[in-house]
Image (tube, one colour):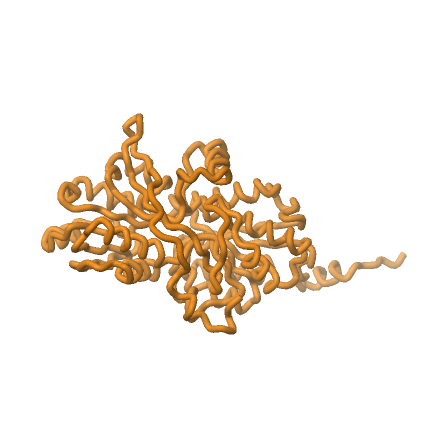
Length: 395
């Protein structure tokens, strides 16, 4: 009896990879599961998985936005070389149409071009480096998070309102750190008394505190994500500097790091594009679902992951499950805007969100424990780089 083979079976028999089905969505999620930044990476991935679950997807083969979907995971450890290897696997072996996640701007700067060159959609669930908003912008890029400079710009505005005449800046020496320093100085009208670009992952800030004492500024602004923030805040409390110097933080204190920082965070002020006290029913439902599933309050990183997953699902619904045109996927995501726990948000021409930025303060709760409280809106406006995005790269 003559045996008959389908074309895919024949290709597999001779070792040739089959292309992904036109009606199957394949998504790679590049996260941070190990190392000093895992504390925020875990929140990002949890939010992503909760968003998938909210849209009806819990396992490979389930439908996301009406199309059968497979999800692949990678851990870049906030290392560009590791991120490149994971992205190469997503593209060549897993044959994904969309890559999401990417916590670190150092990793984002390394992986963006290879992703775009492969005609894969990049849905940022955290990092938002300035070059990707300007000269390196690409129509295949869609952000579900923020543009690096804007929280810092909002902090500069806040410091102006508070009448701060001098400030010392501390940030890690990598793309996001430089973006935050630049963003702050773009809006701040007082004197920058000094700045320190520390090692990414730094855990000892005593030398920086000595410099702060020497210049005696009215305030300090620090960007110290993940475990860096825990170390900084504990040492800040021990130093006694907070008795005379106001502290503004960026991506340092959040519900991912606050349990480890504890009461040392009380009295600090920050800006954020997520207000945990926003009364929007979508926001309250998200917080309730996250606490029920994971037993702790969500952070801004969880918000990013949650919104990224849901935005992909909305695009697939709008496209009737058609996955074959990456530009159409990105264009649809941008055109429909982001149905977010932060509100109904629109996109700038470079794929970054136009969204409110809020003042948050860390206060003592009824039980004496530190808790973030949303306060007033600082501003809502497009990022400062949209006009630098080449016209032929805009959507």
